[in-house]
Image (tube, rainbow, N blue to C red; front, side):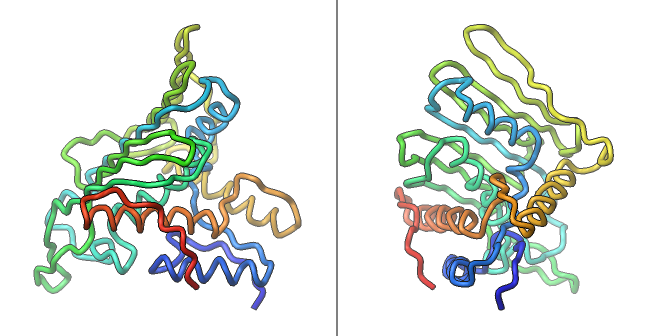
Length: 274
């Protein structure tokens, strides 16, 4: 219908559905944005900017550790989060964001991945007390190689006994940059540090006073929506994620699923079936 959209990730129940939305958006020449708000999170946005500015030199390796305990309780009721076909599981819920910000840090798309996915809590009671199988992974370990040769290691868990938070470390030829965010992921709980031969320095992150005490995603989502509205007025908002960006992240998720099933490296699924 030619109407602009801001679509929540993962922008389709399947890779093919996501590709179909991208094709429709391109055909209709409308603004089609994706709800990938972590690229707006102050610490991650700052990390992307300083890496792009060359403060640690050419990137060689990126590591991500993102662990929470939200799914560790076996008595939590079964929901859509426990079924991959409904958009559940850490690959869909968490790694869509990871696969979105990783290429921004590496400066190139992911070429191939190797993934080990596990389901730690294998069944949950539904609202009637019936035990239902969990059909989505809640813990993944991923290795990846980007098209420019940069490598990455990723560990994401929603059922971790360690409440370690969200950590991104970027190794460059001249030093390292690291983003750390402690649970429960409130504003003020994150930091960004750079270490080079000149020493270690902490970067100043912007304050978001209207959002004090809230989840750090709140100001990120507000900024994302503002960019979407500005784009409708014809402004070029470079940070805003498009449906095509989410499609690339979905390609990486599909590769991770294939790799977990086969135990082998899998290339990013770049076909664009509509």
